Length: 117
Image (cartoon, rainbow, N blue to C red; front, side, top):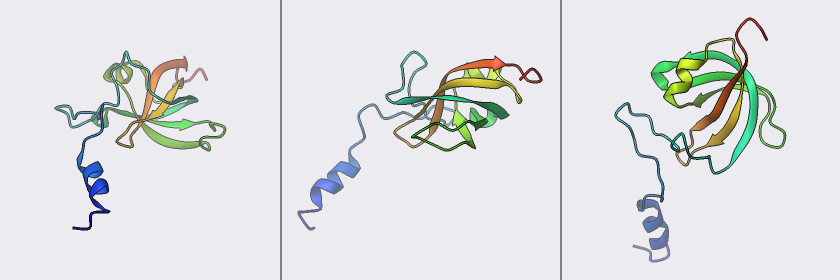
């Protein structure tokens, strides 16, 4: 084996500190509900669909200046969020990306219930 590649091989084989662990449902959590995400950005949008089987929301969100253009995308959420929101609700929250590449929404608040936005 090429000894110059050994550090890379070792790095790829060592789990990252704080890596999310899979749950029995197969969904990995980026952080506990009481932990703030490492790097987050404010997000405003409208829930297009509640994807309970994926523990996620499909959200059409506004542009996040310097980060992301306006688009519709899926965000993982804590289970309690799925019980509070429905399609058509205007929401705000904090968007972050976990180490496994999943997009998460934390601190989700309904700003205008469906039909009132």
